[in-house]
Length: 289
Image (cartoon, rainbow, N blue to C red; front, side, top):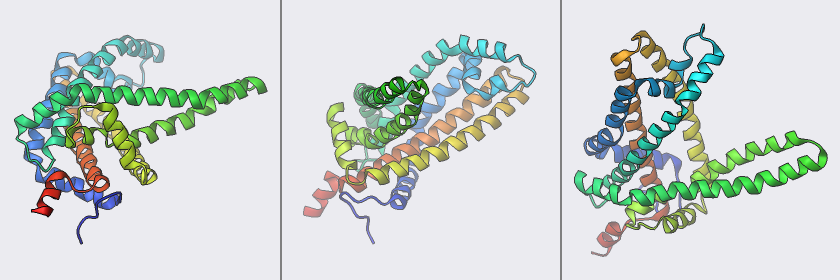
């Protein structure tokens, strides 16, 4: 039985299709992911080992005899470089995500063409992030203000803290509704971030709760894996007693993880887009030929 297109959403089919897309394009995806995820991670860990060790978390807190106040002070000192490096990584990876989605499109572009597509879409991809934060900020205000007012009137300021839970849920909901924005940006060849956001909201509208459930389960699974993986990674790096070897282990491991996660996330985005948007233009042309 063929895949059903057009406003239908099958989580199992999306998962299988994503793996098929990654498998079919693995060699090319690995080249792009290595350039945009593995190499930057490795370079930053080798060039700024102290900062990236702090960013790894477990390596910083792995010493049970360390003074908690001293550890916290050290971590706070690293916050500035951490944010700067994280921002640099994200900016570089924006083009990588777009390039990998382009590689999995039915147009079959080359690696060079895909990288150019990703680079061209990078400002629009960054704008998508700004749109998400704007929507989240407005949503938090709508949720938090009533809770705060009611708490003030009742003399229960702690009531405002309850708003944190629906605010967190709203962020997941917005992410789920915007999850097709980048596939739309690349696969529908539009550089308008507002248009791609509206298109994503439209595509996910009828199946929004299924899409939300899908991404939530995936996020929880990733969070558990990340906690376990970073803990083990910190211990391994600790056994290497820091230095170049420890930085090399952390850089390669985090870079490889980012590669695998990036390929899978892009594959899932394309797979869900195919289900909810229906056949791409190439498929429609083939039908009428």
